[in-house]
Structure formats: C-alpha cells, structure tokens
Image 1 (spheres, rainbow over the protein chains, first blue to last red):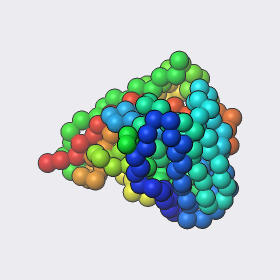
Image 2: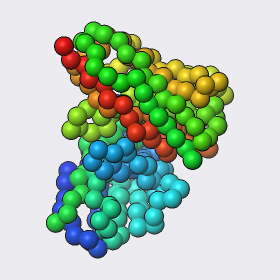
Image 3: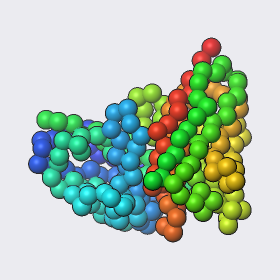
Length: 107
Length: 123
C-alpha cells in the first residue's frame, strides 16, 4: 500500500497568513492526489483533485502543486473559515490512502 | 443540489452485522462511482472501498482492513448505495461517510460527501 505522510501535523497561524502544508507519498503517484478540508464535527469537503485542480466552487485562495511523491497545499491568505484539518489522499492505486491530517488553528 | 444521506448506523455487538444505506439525490446516480470512507473517533479518514458504475460492471475495491467482511453494493433504480458489514470488530467503530466519485475525472476521486452515520461496536 502507498503510505501518505503530511507535515506539519499541526500549525498555528493568524488571519491573513500564507500557509503551506506538505504531503508526501511513499512511492510515485503521478498527480493522483486530492486535498480535503474537515471542520470539527462536520463532513469533509473536497478542495482539490489531480494535485492542482480546484473543485467547483472552491475559492482561488487555495492552490495545490506537485507531482510524483511531493505535493503542497497552499492557502494564500488565511481566513477564519479556513481553520480546519486538511487531508491529502492518493488515488493512484488501491487501496486509496489518506494522509494523517494537518490541523490548522488560530495563533 | 447533490445530496447524500446515510442511515443505518447504531450500536452493535462485536461479531454482529449492520447494513448502512446512502440515499442519493440531485444527480444521475447510475453514472457515478460511489465510495465509503470512515473516521474513528478523534482519528483521521480511512478509505473503506468503492463500487464502480454499471458501465464498469459495478466492480468493487476494498481496504485490506475490511475485505472479506464488508460488501459494497448499489441499487441504481433506488439511487442508493449500501455497505453490508459483517463480523464487526470494536476497531470498526467510526462515522461512516458516503462519497460520490466525480464523473469525467480520471480516477473518479470524491467530489461530494454525505454527513455520515455513526457505527459503534461494543458489548
């Protein structure tokens, strides 16, 4: 199985900050990488697929990049509604696997 | 508006069985791959498995942790997805989410999620 890691596991940031989260796959997954946002007590929300393509309705402050084994999610200017846990997921091969998550909270 | 509504969760004893349902609306259900994802209390997301659409023979894939115990099925005439869970273990305690696979995207990755239903396996 492909193992996914994320760093950092948590971070504290202020409104307006630029935030970058890293996701790494244990083997190459081309660009078959998705990002999800989850707020406490809520269902996940899909943000990005194919490493860098925004899902419909997702604001452009979110961006993704990477290919192969190393990927990043960037939030250009953090807003109060962005405080959440972010997960990456590879869908290059079965079983699909998620990263452990990165919790973004308020500094 | 895409809606996915899970039901069927509850308390079950270890070794028991439970069947979850997901009622879909707001889109052509038969066109889409569908999946189940779970989240144990205080933990991260875990992919459970998926079913492909009719065009791809309704074939299924499963995580190793549930293979042989869980079965994913669908009834396109009822716009419904199911998860039959047998031989349940305490480790299966989680919120179970129904998830839609995006149409027309290579890999059919999840684009919409249901609200989830809680399954508790305990004696």
